Length: 208
Image (cartoon, rainbow, N blue to C red; front, side):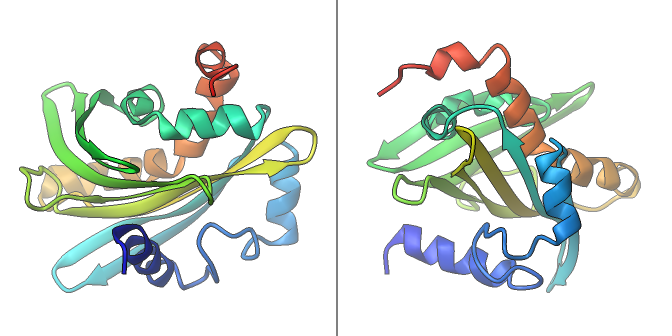
């Protein structure tokens, strides 16, 4: 089994409830779809205790007013993730082999300085990326994995779907910021949309 397939299978299991497939819109209610059509971000939160891990996250969806080609070029631009992941100040590729890469992430907020490495796999056929924290590298969060996918939508627009579960650790301060972390995590499709409909748009227009 390839690394990409293994990761996709793991994520499908992780989001088996309530989702029935990786980033499918089947789990969206009629009300959710109305909100999407109105330009709203749709979020479904999830919390899970898995052994010693206290995982938070869920899934979210957003329709963007950009064509699928532009959206995919941005999703495939791993160093550009600092432009739409909250609090990220650095996102650099450490190693790349084909569609697999190690992406070093640094997030800073006041005195907080968090670093970790994502093992990422791009899947051009599905226009998606899957990722997980590389525990063989130094990491300031306990665990994390997820996916992001873009699909064409009518009117030359794009539907972006995102899902992730993370354990950011323990402590009084962590317990205080945990709700804000989950909210910002699930708002990534909105930040992606804002970036691509704004200053990031021209960067990817006309990209091969």
